Amino acid sequence: MEVISVKNITKKYLIHKGQEPTFKGAVLDLLRRRQPFVSFPALENVSFNVNEGETVGVIGENGAGKSTLLGLIAGTEKPTSGRISVKGSIATLLELGAGFHGDLTGRENIFLNGSILGFTGREMREKYRGIVEFAELGDFIDTPVKFYSSGMYVRLGFAIAVELSPDILIIDEVLAVGDEYFQKKCLRRIEEFKKRKKTILFVSHALELVENVCGRVILIERGGIRMDGKPREVLKRYRELVRNKDPFLSPKEWGTEEAVIKDVRFFNESGRETKTFLTGDKLLARISYEAKKRIEMPVFGFSILGQDGRNYFGTNTQIENYDIDHIEGEGVMELEIERLSLFKGTFFFNFALHSADHGVQYHRLDFMHEIEVENPSEEKGFLKLPCRWERGEQ
Image 1 (cartoon, rainbow, N blue to C red):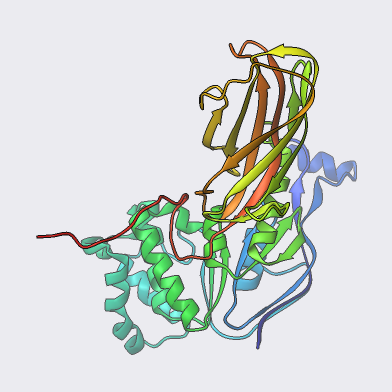
Image 2 (tube, rainbow, N blue to C red):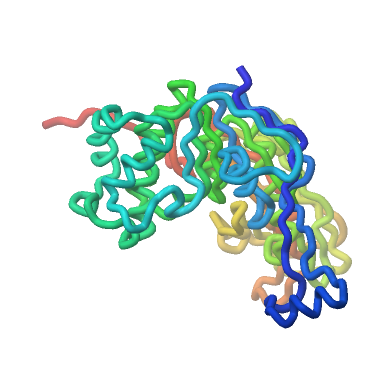
């Protein structure tokens, strides 16, 4: 059943041109019939539907329009044009302190939020203990919330939202403020919501979290929907967009080119060419090269990097004690990884061909070759270690 319908939504804001507005400037603008404001479209012609029980991630760069979209769905803002329909009760965590009165205590704000959402005093008294226990604020529950830290705001806001058990839960990045313990506690509650077929809209820059929590992801770019689909595919597209804007992560090819790596191909254990592997698979990379002159004692190397540019592993023929006396003309080097001990994700292979003393870089390929790794098991983490269990003697 469809619970959220967004049809051709456009949201525009008026922003002032040039310097800060002054009374004198306003008078001059009026006399000169000059428009001091310009219309800025935060969202433009956006349409999508969300079904009951879906957990939908919304991702994009800062300023893309994510928070504006969630505010429109929550009803805290009104669209310039278009139509939004929502079926069921909504609880929102859009920004720190939203929905709280700073001069009221945590206890008073709990009852205030409950009344806004249509709960009676009796119903809120029944829910109060659960909210306080989840928030873990102790004696601070009777302190005005204007004295709360950002983490305390999140604790109270999330506790109220989940304990009131809305049909639709909207979360906009606020979990990033909480400490690791509370984040895990919130994620467990989100999983409970998913099992109860609640609908969740989830905004976060933590892409691994989005992939683990959401069954669908919407990518917003410059106020429009760039892609809407399965998390892995949408996140890959977003990472490509970000990588292309980051000089460090952008594809690079450099070196003296006295010898060059002409081609790199990946194969699985059965010999089939592929760029998709399972955790624990064998990987074979065939590296075709050409030396334009005789080169003594060359070194071939590689490294594996994550989407954030973090180096997971690197080695070369010199480190592995595989000496190459010389190369000349065309040839092939083969790199075999017996067990690909990486978990689910996209990874880059950087390749290098250099002199034995590292003084001459003949050819380097950075962020030009990538593979996908799938992990069908329930193991957690970033890499797989060989391990086994057995009972010992007492």
